[in-house]
Image (cartoon, rainbow, N blue to C red; front, side, top):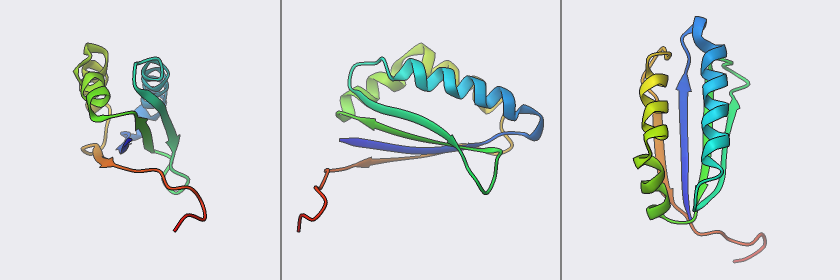
Length: 101
């Protein structure tokens, strides 16, 4: 499984638009092949910071997601609304059952 954690800090006057565009993006992404989950949340300590957490079946599914015009347009348009560069981290993960050693 591939896990993506990203964040974006909206310019003060753009927080509402960042929220709306982010919700549209995650809802659209959830319909893609290989998407297990795609979520966006607001940081409780900084309400201008939006945190994205995504789970993908494999790297191929994530690469296909990044290649979509809708995904590229989202990133391109979002950058214009931010106070700083977005952050993205990608992890190759293996799920472990609670209590397993």
